[in-house]
Image 1 (tube, rainbow, N blue to C red):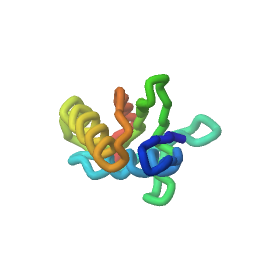
Image 2 (image 1 turned 135 degrees about the horizontal axis):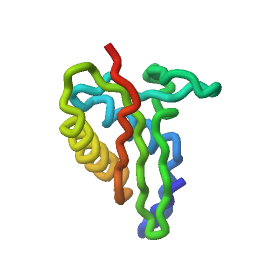
Image 3 (image 1 turned 135 degrees about the vertical axis):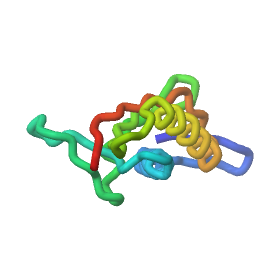
Amino acid sequence: MVKIMNDSGEISITNEVLTYLAGDAATSCFGVKGMVACSKEGGPWQLLRRESMSKGVVVRYDDEGSVSLELHIGVGPGVNLSAVARSIMKDTGYKLEQSTGVPVRKVDVYIDTIIR
């Protein structure tokens, strides 16, 4: 949980809000088919439905009040992987900072599967 203090009081932003916003920003980028997660048995990667896409996002809280994100995604065939990853890093960090005011230190993108 992130807590932001100002003259009017305290604002608390839960992990669920941060993961949802990050997942939403990542899946809106061109070429991204969705967030993915590995099955508990270590089986194949599974595309997550919109309501559970936060399972493909890991938020780490840094000492100076910023966050670092780890995003696990599936992409469509034939897309430029490095361009997609750069787009996700830029857009997700920007959108999360703009909507919450929480600085994003880094965004790591893991392209785990290609989804047809």
